[in-house]
Image 1 (spheres, rainbow, N blue to C red):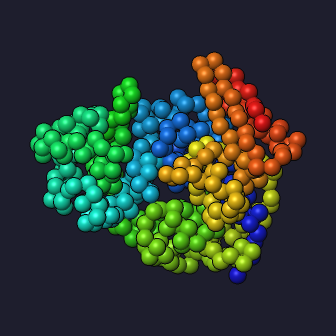
Image 2 (image 1 turned 90 degrees about the vertical axis):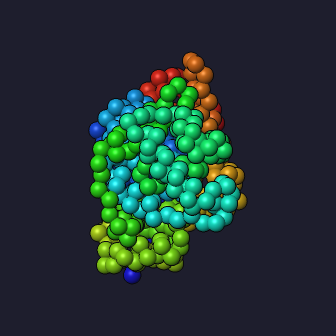
Image 3 (image 1 turned 45 degrees about the vertical axis):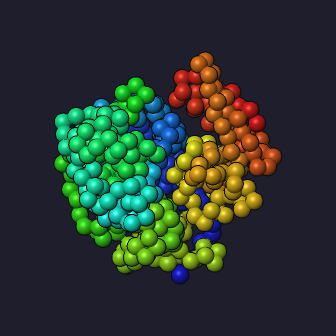
Length: 369
């Protein structure tokens, strides 16, 4: 069995996330693919996650890739959270997501006051209402409510859009360009064009492969935690990779990695790199075990209630503190709260990141430690 250190693992993951050497602007969509999607619960955080990985990127680049070129798509994905995904991979994600059955459970249906029959009607109603149209959430709810009754319409407007997630998993809707302060939905087959689907097992095997490429070495449980599915399903997906994976010992912790990555893991060296990662960053969330990112006594400063994940000051692959971006119309301020006193080199790294933020935001940025 190959044995490596956690320091090597951190450096390997950083390299795969383009957090050591940033990717060129031309590879924006490829970066999204390589890190298995960009979490987009907060769109400004998604933009900063791409800024952290891509040299010279602008907010306009992200917007154009989503709404003009339609090279990316925004939809609900793993763990029921919003993500940006490559449009060309939409069929793969739908193939894995469409097999989810949580919304058919008695508890889920009872909570939302639905039956299997009424949920199916909502699914079909979404497809019919969005045919050739771009509708706001309110317009879509009103259109479905017109056919199914105002009570259903009100349910579609409640909460965090949970009732829209099942049709999203089936590829019946995705996000369209916002209309002022209002989000919109479109039909993916009309917005993106046709896509190829496959069976769930094949899709999950491919996602397990991609996960290990970006987040490995990792365990099957790590993959299940990231995906948000069942423990059994995660283990089945990883085991289905067969000889493609090899068992790795990381300081007594048994994990899996792609066999083709073994040479890179063996020769990986520690890196002295400072990065500012935003809210909900994929590296932060996907780093398992969590104790390798941040000590347990400090974890609550990053992983907060209601699934909130704070921005992280990342130093050599581990959390050295948190930070906050405060903006006004004319300037911005990076406020860093370190977990321990910072050395001169780390402070210089933070200031360098702030200078890069200036060109991204189009604002002068001041650093406050």
